[in-house]
Length: 180
Image 1 (cartoon, rainbow, N blue to C red):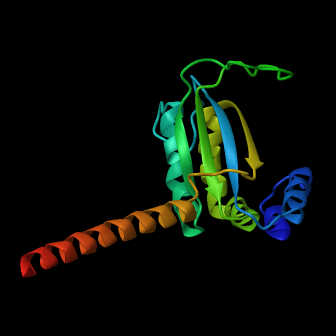
Image 2 (cartoon, rainbow, N blue to C red; image 1 turned 120 degrees about the horizontal axis):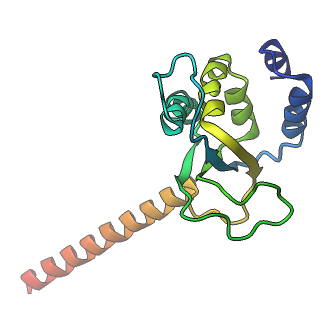
């Protein structure tokens, strides 16, 4: 990844930063928490429609990003607009106003690095940069994650098993009642 990112023209200090992130890999899935402040007057970006607003630009970025995520068993967990300015801000300059938030699940740090080092994402990343006035994105590993696809699949299978058991029990009871 280091070589690919260096060849893609990523600044050496960013390459080092990402290398440290990768070296400290726990092997667990992680979530990327994104606070976004969309640009009210984004600049023109090559490949975007003339006069494209921030949400259009972000959509163009996500058209490329979502397939890259899904190929690696990564996916959005939640996305939505902020409903009010920040309720609690301490020690952060200009951290009061955010327009949107998103959380993405990454299967592994390796999956994340495969995505961000992919040269095909570099061009579309310009759409994201133009769409934002400011952003902060940081990774976190969960202690409790009720939206984990493995947990959800297990719960769905458990519910289906319970429904089938109920159906079979009621069918057996109906057959016994008819045979009496």
